[in-house]
Length: 257
Ligand code: NAP
Ligand code: MN
Image 1 (cartoon, rainbow, N blue to C red):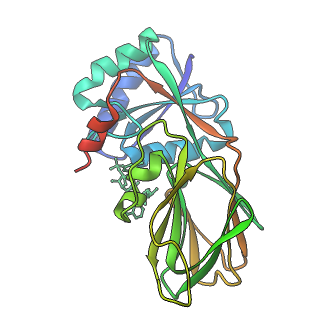
Image 2: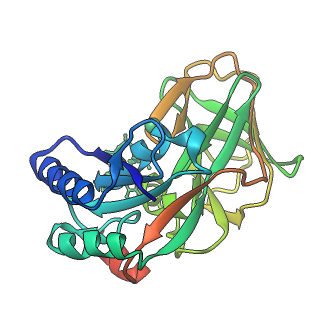
């Protein structure tokens, strides 16, 4: 792997680590290539990681990611500023493992998207009605602000703020969580977070998505002309991440609160 690029958060610390990294890598014969990198260095936070993945979404089969966090410990990265030397040495010596994180494949009647943390439908303007179908069978008729479907990785992000369960790393699961669901006798939805295998087909159907936004990680899209949003059971995009050191999942988790 000789071609690399760097995606960093726009702050002073991240910029200074980027400068150091470029210098070291070029001294070792690596070539900076934004268009067709083999490895993407991510310097910043979990948010920066998501951004970097979306930048290289159409090249995920060829690209891997390697990150250092310039805040606390992250879920996408194992290194903090104090570990910088180890971060670089590990890369140069090739002593890392590779792990893969599956993305959600989301299709609407108009477009398709990929999500690493979660996909969500949110309507702040009015009560949103959504029929939820699991493997093509009607499961519930939801009413409320919206629904979010998160990956294992995304379970510590928005999902966690909504009272969803945190899923340990490696579990091939997704989680459906309500955003302020309305529960009374006329409308029936589960009410609690639902954890499922990630090879399930999930369809979110509505006569009217007027005022609703489809959220895909950091991005949002208006979906007023959409009637059906499906998360496919296939995992055709995965993010390949280099893992140099072993940080326990629970240490990462502990650094969140
Ligand atoms: P962002 O600033 O990039 O991220 C928002 C916060 O979420 C940051 O503190 C980020 O950590 C953290 N984060 C991102 N992915 C995470 C993960 N997998 N586990 C734990 N923490 C994570 O904001 P954005 O660009 O608007 O949206 C990115 C993500 O923010 C979305 O995917 C969604 O999960 C989350 N979000 C959360 C809420 C909420 O909790 N109420 C609302 C909207 C969106 P870093 O500081 O390390 O970057
Ligand atoms: Mn994005």
